[in-house]
Length: 205
Image (cartoon, rainbow, N blue to C red):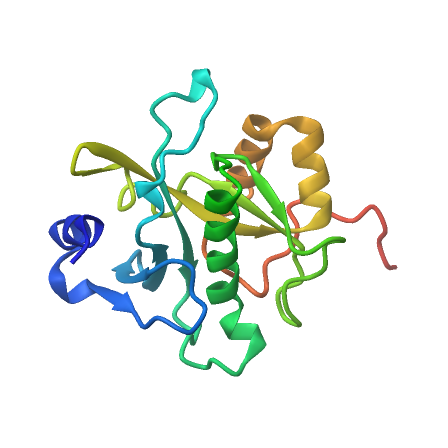
C-alpha cells in the first residue's frame, strides 16, 4: 500500500478509498475516493505523481509535490468504458501525469493544457476544449495539503474550460480569472451542462 493511500485512509476512512483497476498502457496508478458534499462525489486521483519533485521556480518553493484529480458527479459512470463521454477522464489524467514527468515540467495553479493541437472539444457532451489546473474549490477542506512521509502533498483539480475562458484567463491573469470563476459558481465538479462564465455578445431575439 502506498504512503498516499494510507494517508487518504486516515483522512477519509478505509471504506472510502480504493485502488482504481489498472489498464494496459497506464502510466500511473490511480486512487478512487468517495466523498460527500451535500451529494456523493467520486474523486479520481493520481497515486504517485507527488513522488516526482517538480522543478518549480524559486518563488514557488514548497509546491514541488502535487497530485492531480478529477471530481466526478454521481451520474458519472467510469465503468462504462466503451462510452467516450464517460471514459475520457481516465485517458486525460494518464496523459497529464505522463506529460509532466516525462518532460520534467511542473504543474501549478493556473496552468492550462489544450485538449489536442489544435484544441478540440473533449467529448460530444463536454464542449470545453482546455483543461485548467486549480486548487480545490468545492473540495478545499477535504483536499487540503496532506503530510505524506516527509513531503507536503498538494492537490490540483483538473477543470475543463471553454476556449473563451482560456483566452480570458491568459489575458486577465489567473488570480483575477479564478476569482471571477468562483464568484460565478464555477468549481471542479465535472458538468456536461456547465455554460461558459462569459456570456455571448450575440443574443437571439
